[in-house]
Amino acid sequence: MDKLFDVVNNGITGIVNNACNNQAIATPLSQNAFFPMAYMGEMMSRNDMPMKMHDFAARCINLVGLGCKIMNTHQSDFTNTDTYFLCKTFISNVCDELEMPNNDYQRKYWLEQINNNLLSDS
Image (cartoon, rainbow, N blue to C red):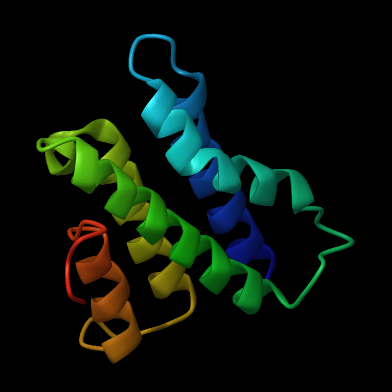
């Protein structure tokens, strides 16, 4: 699970740095949409996790999905941004580390969710 910790930690760091801290890219909307990821990143400690690592990773993926939905609702070209790419890569990397096949229902669901907006039916 040490590798999963690294994948989640590096993914969170990349998303937060891009969406919240990058002065050239970050907007008030992206900062608010991805702030929960910054909080999750602060909770990470290799020797003292608040829950099992795979559960923590799944919660992070759900927060990434929500952040993407917020951005898709208010920014029509969000799927063409670096932040979107980082989110998609994060989900794929975590799923790979959890050894989820490409056709796994949960993996496909998570990757589809980042393309939706808050007004989508799914």
